Length: 201
Image 1 (cartoon, rainbow, N blue to C red):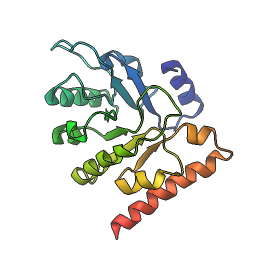
Image 2: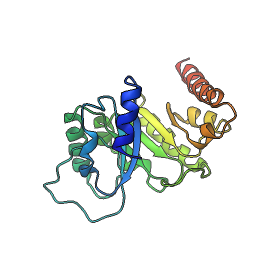
Image 3: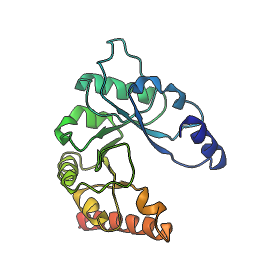
Image 4: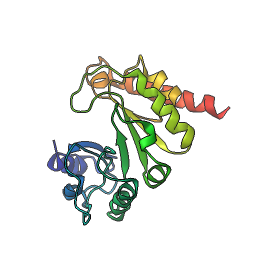
């Protein structure tokens, strides 16, 4: 699944908001997504392990990437370059990465913070409850930022995600294997909305 699929979806559902989570080794090379077909695309690009890039790196994508091989200043520069393409930028952290890896400067520059609650790369994994402490820590530092969780989210743990501070949910297996996917989606939305209401009181 890549840009051709996204292009087809965009043509059939022109007003859709696509949140794409890619696993690539060089986020600066996914420039194919930076086009008029994806004006509302929020792409999550995870940078897997590799050698550090050259200082003259040119970023041509909208990305949320693992905080592995760039220093904070380079992360911010990457995000700004992504924004210059007219797209939104997010930052993803894996289960092993502490939330403190997302510095204030990075979070303020990014549009969304993503906490992976499974190891990326395979669907159907069990939800890592220990990752909720990272969501809580990020929410305490960034009360107005979109904070997303991705991996193993189900109707049984959605309340935990919502109470920890996540307001954006990614779910695959829980929806596509449900007898009534619409009911699962509604349950997710209800949990997030109710948590937001309780915090507003």
